[in-house]
Image (cartoon, rainbow, N blue to C red; front, top):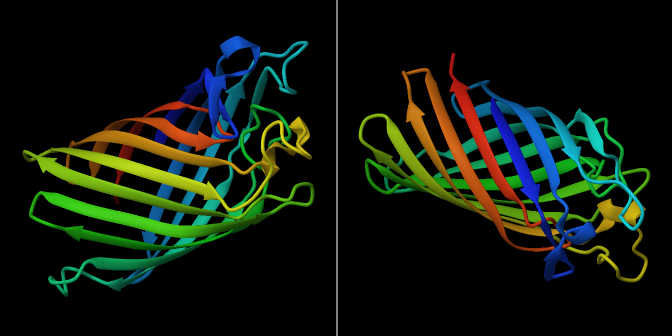
Length: 251
């Protein structure tokens, strides 16, 4: 499980970075996530992610449509992973897995600057590759595509990628660096033709997020961690700072 808090006083209007509406008013969101993985077989596992979120932004004349506070269930993600190659069995090769997941939209309203998501149901497919380069250093990456649909909005398809490098320090401590990309394949521009605040989910939203995580292994079953990440580039998105703490337990 994890607690994630993100905030921004700047955003990307198209690809130009500028203060959030109101001269840099804070746009914030907090989410409590529960993640889980269950092994069905040696090479097949189910995973899920469900969360409760809340967001805030100022309301008033001259500001985009918002609610002072919005709370509700975040989008549910339920997936199945099939490990095609295991580097333990084939030491010369990286581990390779295929993942397919269903997405179910949460129970929030859309069309606000601080909506909790785009409100779309859909599917995503990805390929995951990882390799221990040495006993204490590992590299991994995931590349995939996401498609979502809504009765209200035409949500653009997107491609996503996540790259990670991790090192084990001592017996219990580990450090990892990550870089994430989420890129819409089409969509509207803020302030462009056809755009209105009610059509936020239809934006061409691109995000590039760089981060670092420190994890500490308490026991064979328990670990804790802390992360910081920052949106370093984007399009039609908030330039957020993202902080999180996590608690992990294996049965």
